[in-house]
Amino acid sequence: MFLLLLGGLAAAILILADMRSITVAKQKVLLRVYSLGPSQGAVVEVGTSRSGQWPSRDGHSTLLWAELCRRDNREFISIDINRQHLERARDALGPCPATLIEGDAIDVLPRLQYPIAVLYLDGADAPEQALAQYHAAANNLLGHAVVVIDDCHSYAMAGSEGKGTMLLPYLRSGGYHVTIEELRPGRPEKMGWAQRGDRNVPVTT
Ligand SMILES: C[S@@+](CC[C@H](N)C(=O)[O-])C[C@H]1O[C@@H](n2cnc3c(N)ncnc32)[C@H](O)[C@@H]1O
Image (tube, rainbow, N blue to C red; front, side, top):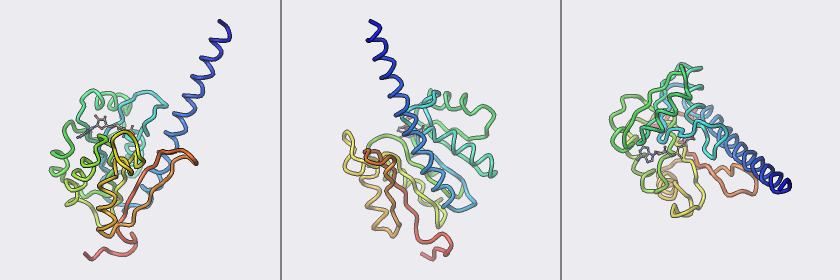
């Protein structure tokens, strides 16, 4: 009995350590891409942090973006189709400013009035959604905006580049420089991000 309990405890510790490491790895990439994007403009996220618990297998991205935008006095908008997830995020954010919008991102994104510096796509697994969401936001993207897509590895039904299976090739062919980040050495999880040209050179097309 004692050995069983010990085994259970060890397994729980390993699972928590694994969740922490994926969350931290995702946040490191988000911090880096944030620093590479335009210094003005909004951060717009599709897929709000749904877990009030730290750590989880997600990136706790909403809390990170909100804190960065608060520090830098920028607009942060997070869109989610699930009201409960938004409510959990609102609780976790406390007084930190963030505009949380309930709805399908395809409908919400074209209505946004802000120039977008960072577009973070972390909604449903279906690759066609990430592509459609990019198109829905495209008119508001600043010249050197960074487009970030979570889960760009093969999993479930998502295809060889996960949520980015359709969008990443589209961005590559459209002149974006695409980077695929391996989140943890030797592990499958990847995040993709794309930026057009050099952010220090004005985009002319
Ligand atoms: C992986 S979770 C987001 C995790 C979060 N970015 C984080 O790092 O903690 C995906 C979220 O996308 C939302 N979602 C799925 N399809 C959506 C859609 N079409 N429009 C907006 N949100 C959507 C889900 O409700 C879910 O909360």
